[in-house]
Length: 240
Image (cartoon, rainbow, N blue to C red; front, top):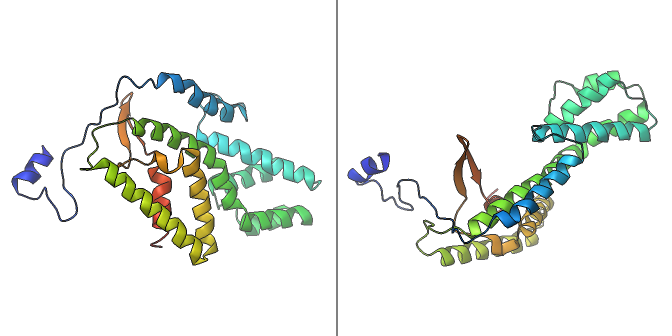
């Protein structure tokens, strides 16, 4: 209805895009996604089994379990008997970025100098990198499922899907070259991280002329993006 109203006032065609109703995409019935279902579920099950998680546990539970184990093992390596309260507070700070457990409080709580030095150093230098590493296998799994679906979808909005895909691929290759020559270490590190994700789901061949597909399941709305997320991050490095 809204698309019709916009068209009536001749505002549906803008300078760089058009405004219209949602585009319903077609997934061919000949594509047997069921055969790959077990592959994806087994990958998820493997992650789930690392910490003996249940089907109704969330990703945050996985994250929490990792940090609890990681911090506890680090305390053992430093021969420090970590109190449960400190373990819980450090887990909240590192798993969920809960900064209510402040550095000043950490310094007061941890009397063991070697373990304290490790905590402070890790908090400052390595924490954020590890968060990305923790989430990467889940991101890659969801991107992989999305890419598989999107590669077999038809009905894209692009007037010339093949040309649109080629243009995106060329832009990505150009971005990789430019960022590599730029010498910005942080950008290069981000580039490598995003390229690893892209490569894990099929590389440039996984790119399609669409950001993603939105669908409803049991009354809730979800979205698969496939290669769009890493590609968008790579191209965005040229502008920031």
